[in-house]
Length: 269
Image (cartoon, rainbow, N blue to C red; front, side, top):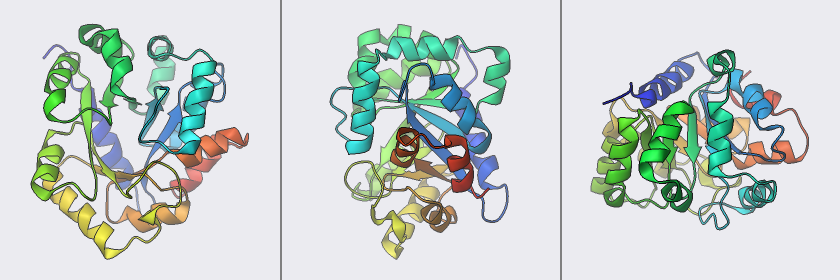
C-alpha cells in the first residue's frame, strides 16, 4: 500500500476520546462544507477541532436521500455558494501544516455521483493530498464498493460502512468487519435530524449497539441519526464508542451560535 492508513488514526482518535473519563464522549461532528458561507468553512472546522474525535465534512448534493430537512437545506445553500467536491479538497489540501496539526481526522460524507465524477484514481490522490482519513457513501452497497475501497486504500483513505437496526445479523457482521475507521451505526430509522428514538435509549437500541461492538472487534462503533442533545449523547455513551451529531450542528450555525461551545458541551465540557 502506497501510504499509511489514515483511518487507523481515525479509530485511535475515537478510542482516546471515548476513554477520556466519566461523563465524556467521543463526538464526531458533521458540517456541510461551505455552509452557511464558503469563507467560514475552515474557521468552523477549527472551532470544533479541540472538542471532537473527528469531523465529517458533508459534500453537498442536489438529492440527499438519507438526510432530513436541515441538512438538505444546508446542502442547497452550499451548492448555491458554489461548493463542489473539487473546492472542498482544494480547501483541505491547502491547509498549512500548523492548521492540519490542530484538526482531528477528517471524513468526507457524500453520495456516490460526485465521487465517481472525479474518477477513482484522481479521487484517491486528492483525498491523500487533503489528508482525508475516510469516506462515507450512504448509497454505495458493500459489494459494489469493493473497487472504490481498493482504489482509495492505495492512497491511505478508508471507507466507512453504515449499519441500520434492520440490517440482518450476518450482513451486519460483514459490514462491521469491512468498515475502516469506525462503524456508522444508524441509531434510528428514517433520515437525519433530531428527535429520533435515540433519546431513550431502549433495550432494543442498546442490544443492537452491543452486537455491533462485538462484531466490529477493535474498530470503534459510532451511533448517528436523531442525536441532537448532550442528554442523548450521555445516554448512549456507555453503549458505543462515539456519537455522531449533524443536524444540531447545522442548526447551531444557522442560528449564528458558537459552534465550538456547542460541541464542547455535547462532549461533556
